[in-house]
Image 1 (cartoon, rainbow, N blue to C red):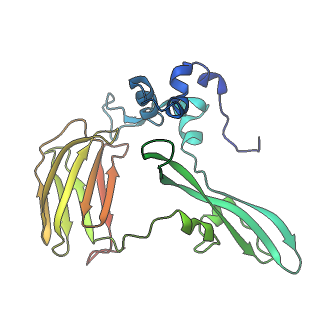
Image 2 (cartoon, rainbow, N blue to C red):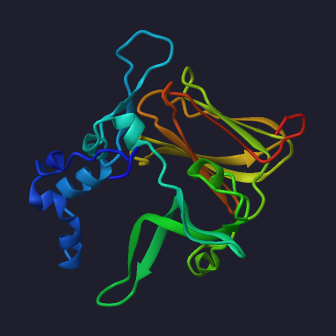
Length: 257
């Protein structure tokens, strides 16, 4: 184990029943996942807000079993997966590196040996890059690279859906409503309130006009995220450790972004 790597406590994982730890075996046998397996997968990285303390801003609770694998739940469990390492150095050609940026969510459709089915999960995104001999990249400096060589990623990456709309989203914890502020009319929009498992609680649709657009949900409990769809644009916003849900997209007039 390299210095600075997170310590994984394998003993904790042995406390899980084999029937729960083997959802892959269930899928290979072409059987649907059990309720226990679905619950176990859903709890992989459970993040909730501890509102039992009357303080300014509630601390997050790292209660998912993934965090139990580490001695330091937040520092190690939330550490990024991106890295870079040099594998070739030459006086004439400089330094060549292999690395990986933040994982993307992959959806793969399998249409053999049975009915079509989807496999969903994080996918590493590898790349190669080069620097002169006098420049040595670190994990921190590599994260700031604006261009790398990853031509194979084109075979599995979907096309960019286009420019994000200039939009501001705010969820009001007092009223349970969602406000979308737009510079100009954007047409029909769908907004969903989700629980912390991303399961829809309620949905509303209405046209987005210039200015403030209030989606009157009046839903003030169990809301962990907000999903939004306007045309081809889709995104969701997850509540932070303070329980606040807000986001900005695009470049609105008068903004500093």
